[in-house]
Structures are given as C-alpha cells and as structure tokens.
Image 1 (cartoon, helix red, strand yellow):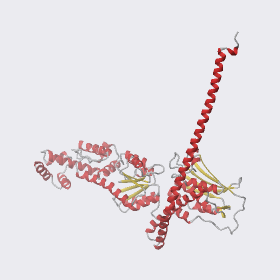
Image 2 (cartoon, rainbow, N blue to C red):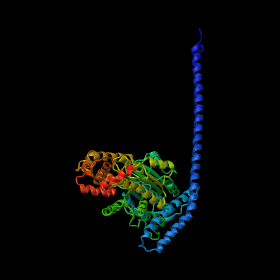
Image 3 (cartoon, one colour):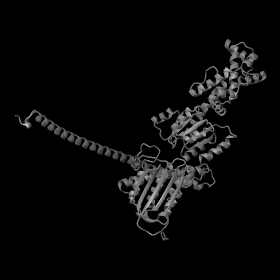
Amino acid sequence: EQYLWLTPAAFLLYYVIIATFIYVIYTYRKGKTEMKHKLELEYRLRLKEEKLHEEKLEFFTNIAHELQTPLTLIMGSVEHQKQQQASTDPSNDVLGLVHQQASRLAYLIEQLMEFRKAEEGHLQPQLQLMNASGFFSSIASLFIHFRESNRVQYTYEIEEGITMNGDPDKLEKIVFNLLSNAFKYTSHGEKIHFRVYRNPVTSALEISVANSGHDIPSAEMEKLFDKFFTGNTPRKFSSGLGLAFTKQLVELLGGTISAYCRDNWAFFNISFPLPQQKAVTDISIAPVHPSLLIRTIAKEPGSKQLISAAANNKSTLLQSLEDNRPIILIVEDEAPIRQLIRTLLGEHYLVYEAANGKEALDCMTRFIPHLIITDVMMEDMDGLELCKQVKNIPDTCHVPVLMLSARGTIDQQHEGYDAGADAYLPKPFHNEHLLGRVKQLLSNRQRLHDYFRSKATIAGNLPQGMDDTDRRFICSLVEIITADLENCELDATHLETGMAMSRMQLYRKIKTISGMTPAEFIRNVRLQKAAELLETTKLTVSEIFFQTGFNNQSYFFREFKKKYQRSPNEYRAANKVESSL
C-alpha cells in the first residue's frame, strides 16, 4: 500500500502550494516595484511642479523689478499733479482713481517681492511692542465704506486692551489680504465678520475672518494656501499667491492659519502665541497705524461718480425722460471700470450699470438697451451666461453684446463668440478702440433702421446678416399685417394678439429692430404695398389706397409723398418710364 504523502493527490497539492507561494512572492515583488516606481514618479512630478513654481516666481519677480521704476514715475507724477490742482477741479477725481489703482498695483508688486524673499528665507520679522487692539481696529474700519458698494453686511469685533510683540507691516498684510479676499468673493446680501480676541484657554491671539454664502469641499479648502492653486470652484476665493503669501507671513511670525467651511460659512482662523500681558495702560507704547499704501488702496472714493450702480441708474432714468440718446448697459463687477466706461460714454449715450449678469437681466425687464457691454468673469452670473440668455430671449435677442475680458486668447474669444457676442475687446483696452467698437455696433443698428424705413419689408428682401430670430419676428409681423391690410382699423392691438406679446414687449421689439413704433411700422407696410401695386397693377389710386387700408385720400397722398418724395401718380409714371428704359 502506497504512503499518503507519495500519492498523486499529495504531489498535486505540493505543486499547488509551491505555485501559490511563487505567485505570492512574484505579486509582492511586482507590487513593491510598481509602488517604488509610482513613488519615484510622484517625486519627479513634485520636483517638476516645484521647479515650475520657482520659474513662475522668478519670472514674475523679474517683471516686478521692471515695473517698479515706471510705477514710481506714475505715482509720483499723479501725486504732483494732484497737489498742483485745486481740490474742486473735476480732473482730481480721475487722478485720485489713477493713484488708487497704481497703489493697488504697487501693493501687489510688493507682495510678490516679499513672497520671493520668504521663499528664499531672507524675509525677517521686525518685531515691536504694539497696541494690537487699536491697530486691528484701524484696519477693520478701512473696509466700512465697502459695505454699501458691495452690498454686504460687514461687522467687526475687536477685544480691547491687547498688546503684543508683532510686526505691523506683516500683520497689516495678513489682515488686509483676508478681508480683501472676503469682500471680493462674497455675493450681494451675504455677511462678513472680522473678530480679534485673546483666547482665555490658550492665551493666544485669535484672528477670524468669516463670510457667508460658501460651501467649498474640505479638500479644496485645505489647498487654498498652495501656490497658484485654482481649484474646481471658480470665483470662490483668490488663489495665485495672495493666500499662500498670507500663510508664509503667519508662519514667519510664529502663528498658524487654517480654513474650513461650516453651515455655508467660510472661516479663516489665525492664532498667534501671546504671553500673558496686562491691558494697554502704558502711554509710552506709540500707536501704530495702517501704512499709507494700504490706506490709499482702501480709501473711500472721493469721486462723486464712483457711487452704486443703483444710484447711477436712477440719475440716468431721470435723464432719459427728456433725452432720446441710445441706451448702453454696462455689466461689470469692478466699480472703477464701470466709472471709466461711463465717463467715456456718458457724453454721447445714456448709460445704465449692473454689477453682474443677474442685475443686468433685472434691468432689462424695465428697459431694453441699444448695446450691452459686459465683463466675462463675474459673481452670480458671468458674461458668457448673460450673453446666452440675452440672445435666447425674444425681447433682447437683437441687442448687440460687446464683451470685455482680460482673458484674451483665441480660444477664449471663440468661447465668447459661441455664446452670441457681437464683438470682443481684451483688457486692457484703449479708449479710442472701445469708443470705435461701440460706434460701429450702434451704426450697424442705425443702418438697419434706415433700411426698414427706405426698403420694402413685404417682398422678402430683408437685409443680409440680420439675426435669424429678428428675421422671423419681422416676417411674422408683416404676415399678420398683410393678411388684414384692407382693414383700416388694424392697429397695434391686433399685432399684440397675433404675436402673443404684451403692448410694451411689442413696442420695444419693433422699435429696437426697425426704429419705428408699431403704428409707424403698420403705415410703412401699407405704403410699401401701395407702391408695389402702383408698379405692378393698373388699379386706380383710389382702389389702391382702399385696398391698403387707408380711408382718407388726402392723408394717403401726404404720407406717400413724405416717404417717396412723389405723389402716387408721379410714382407710377416714373416707374413706367424706368421699366420701359
């Protein structure tokens, strides 16, 4: 009898065990090799990404160096010019705006230079004993006037009597960056709260900036402090270098910073170690105030023109009661840009404003502009979505749209044209270029008005390049009129019923496309049909004016001569001569 361990079944089991062992060893070694290769690849990619960041920083730092000299000349020249002019001079408003924006650019360049120093380990804190409560209160108060212009609820709470050894320059940049970020990316009607206090448990100085209206994934919140992070939630928070620089400054001062979302609020919390100190009582501690650069950037506009869009729209509405200039709607979230465009166009056009696409659509329920000038990147509704909606609404599809954007690549411009834009102007733009494009777009509309007044609309020869929606609208309108042309009581009410539109909608649409009121449009079609009958039939003039819905011969003769500069009989005779030739 054969031993059990020498049977074929036993050898098969041995084979399976050995094969399994070899397979496990092979799989383990393969997995280990793949993991090593993956880690090495990730390491190389990380090195490549770091190198790319370094190259970006080096590039931007070099540009910043080059910009410092011309920027110094600009700011110095503007300051000198302001000092030379009287405070009541209207040009001081423009100079003030230029100086404020130049200061903003100087601040960005300064941040970039310091960020580079921090990256290389050359940025050192300059500590001094300071009244932290008074310092942070001064910075917080700089943002009060933004409540109205941004239409947000801004509150701040600063605990009294806090002193610290701190670096005013770097603390100023930290708080200013966070508050600027909050105001920039908080929608209308939302809340911003700034708080500074001493934590009773840890004896740390706590700084908190919170704003409502945000629900960003935790994974993205953690990456907000990464250099050049853009994320998948556009227009929610600044990426680039602003927050990365803020984190560097916080850590340079020995603090920590964190960001998270909770209950539709975004929180940015900073903590600095703060030794137990008595409240500020020593008058020898000199007060520290925000820098001149920060005060200039955050300064409330002295210009009376830089007020809310709603206030400007009320003023324009009052002007429109006695003014028939073309209406232009500016849609731009940056108030200084709106002011610039309004200043350029205000002399020749009635200018309304909106801060985003939603506000623009709301404005267009009250009036239809002759032209829309819109930025692309905006909160709530961007320019692309606005353009799509404008072109899909029957009341507004004929309105030309001019897009302005810093995104000036060919692909980005194609994106604008695909949305229905009639023209695209990259920022920064020259004033004359903008004025020329506006004039061109409005001239095209005026030529269309002239065409409708001079050419026939009943023969199907509508102008080439006319919007398809507008073409269908006019054809339907003419079809309704010609079907009941002999009815002398045909008026706008019949058109409202036939087109299923309200009186105001019909009036706006006809007026904008043709430049005529509904009554003028009906009369124009009657006269064009009368001219056609005079050319192609032997009907008498009396028969023709009855067939075209006129019930008063003298009125028919007067209106016909006004349009064609000839009486009906002279028109028929002239066309017979022309046809015989």
